[in-house]
Image (cartoon, rainbow, N blue to C red; front, side, top):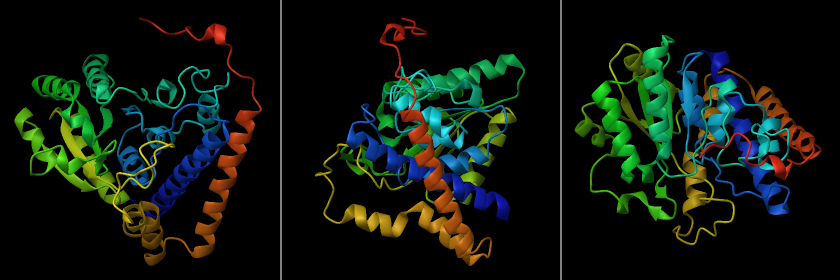
Length: 318
């Protein structure tokens, strides 16, 4: 990544963190009434991976997907409006924080069902096979989803048809409240790809540029007809599973230690300063602008009319 690209990515990552933190505050105050699954600690995965994609490639994610949505360029006000149940939300306030989508920004949506998005990503890749667009699909899910049947089926299907899809597993150490290591046999998670006959690669999910490089290689392989890749990006979840998670399952001091050692924003900030890509004043301005933009977007969304309950079932098909 060039210097300007790296600084722009830092701006997006800071915006994601500010968005998540402010959304959590609004949830605690009752302005947002739906459940929130924050992406604190995952920012470099979405921003780095999205930087590796082309202008027509699609993304879909699990319910912890606000970072992917913002990386795709969905306006902050439309996201806040959706979470607040406003008519101006990205889906008119019908989906909330766990089920929204915005195809105009190539974001095919979050999914509240663990692992279900993998099949949607494979479907998007299958469509790309026939529409002549040359696009690929990226689908993201958590480590716990690797034990879901839908993910197995999606990977098997994608392998057999050599579909242009990149499976991104965000391994944050916990499947909801259960340590990841207790749910899998010994060995790296990316080794699971071998049973399907496609590559599995690991990447430090806190390293923006490493994520971009790894996903770039997977995307190029998919675009050239080489089929799927499983990318396991390891991160540290710096918030609870959801906004009202008491986190009693965590060892004492773990979250504070992870924040000190593994925060991707702190790591990228230090790299930018160390490489002379920007100075303290510029980064402080970026951080201040991100904070102001997030709060302005939230205030504007809160001033909009609520969704009409009579329209709740519009665009819903069973």
